[in-house]
Amino acid sequence: MTQRKMDGFLEAGNRQSLLDFKPAHFAWAQQGAVGVITLNRPERKNPLTFDSYAELRDLFRKLCFVDEVRAIVVQGAGGNFCSGGDVHEIIGPLTKMSMPDLLAFTRMTGDLVKAMRACPQPVLAAIDGVCAGAGAIMAMASDLRVGTARSKTAFLFTRVGLAGCDMGACAILPRIVGQGRASDLLYSGRSLGGEEGLSWGFLNRLAEPEALLQETVGWAQQIAEGPSFGHAMTKKMLHQEWAMGVDEAIESEAQAQAICMMTQDFHRAYEAFVSKERPEFKGD
Image 1 (tube, rainbow, N blue to C red):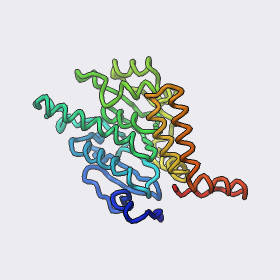
Image 2 (image 1 turned 180 degrees about the vertical axis):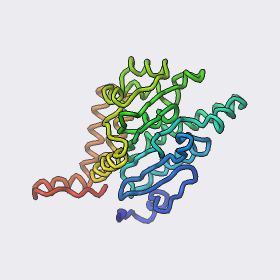
Image 3 (image 1 turned 60 degrees about the vertical axis):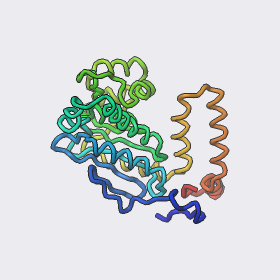
């Protein structure tokens, strides 16, 4: 994909590539304009570690400067999404940490959610099997979720003696499924099955396990073919308007839409409509 050009003094630090990106703690692949993150410790149902938390956070932060990737898919290897924080590599050490170190850790995990919400690319989670703890949070923090009938999503923090208010769960989950349903999941720590997750609106779609990745990547590719600047603005507004009143939201959307009307993608769409052709969006 050809990146658009900027003036030289703007290019440095504002445009980066992931074509040579080789993470140490998860797998990364690019399928056209779609980046695929694979949590790949299947023998342990893909738990997170201190290192993988940090590397994921840094990747999502970097995506703010990457034009060649227009959508992200997150999946787990081996029939499970993610079992949460590794019991031996995270939970055990946490019981021996000081308060300042514990706060540094919980802030780091929260920063992963902040980075997922701040990156301009829509993030799609492909959820199969176990999706628990921090894995459930990553699914929640994604923009769209495709599950399977056998997927089991559990915000199980209270089951290990913690609060359900982890990594933004009390703010984000009620906005997806409603306050009452979020309370059910966060107090009980029970598993939300695939069919129930779809009916509740936590999952956007269901797929057969063997077709999950293909269908999720296919959806991501459809999104990637759209106006990436417009999608990034939509994501930003969806996030920022949580803290706005209706009047402020309408004004913010007026400004956002006026900005989008200055893009070449908007002009391409008009010209394609007049010519009865399909527009080719380039993100500028």
